[in-house]
Length: 286
Image (cartoon, helix red, strand yellow):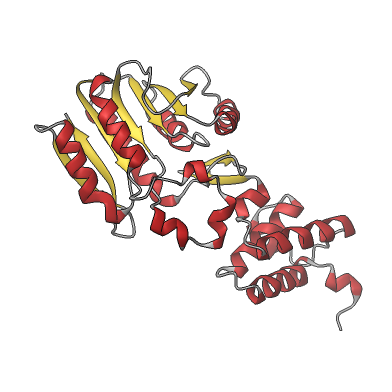
């Protein structure tokens, strides 16, 4: 048996946390263990490996055990640490908002490309802003724009406002509590990352998803209720020559294309793939 001092070391605490998570069936137990130990110590993951002899205090060990127990119960890591990186920007997250996903970075990249191609565009709407991840990433890259970050959830908007303030963007991003595009002013570009989980997907969803807000996931029985409604509202809001970018489930992309063509028969509508090669964003150029 290792001496008590050794058992308190980063090296052995990492090993024991990893083993506990692996036993609970966590897929990337080694990664989650590193994140949790680094979080408890307020250091980078790199420092864990450069200083494996560092010791955890008794309160730190107790906190680590609590966090590991919650992760074993499938609480998502970002809800345990209270933060998530998205498009290179660190964001506060909590169970009031959906955890930003890497695949949503495609929405940001396409928005930046569109804005670079339309330098006169100034007005952007971010529908279903949640934590404000997409709005913040776009505002950081496109300095000329002003963004209305809209969400129906007041709790989500409080998280978004915190992140907007953290990134010093309060002059350029305003939060708006509203149902989709109701009452929205004119926009040159509309970004939509709305709930698109279908009824069938909800019934077989991973255990981690039960901790995320249903309001941010539930897209109705076919997953398209909110996307369908937003597309119906968009023609009254979008400026001539404007663009719309909609994130969706890969299986929904062709149906979203048909919905868009119904609203804008002469628009150029295209589908763009995420890094995994799956249809992820529908682009509409009116």
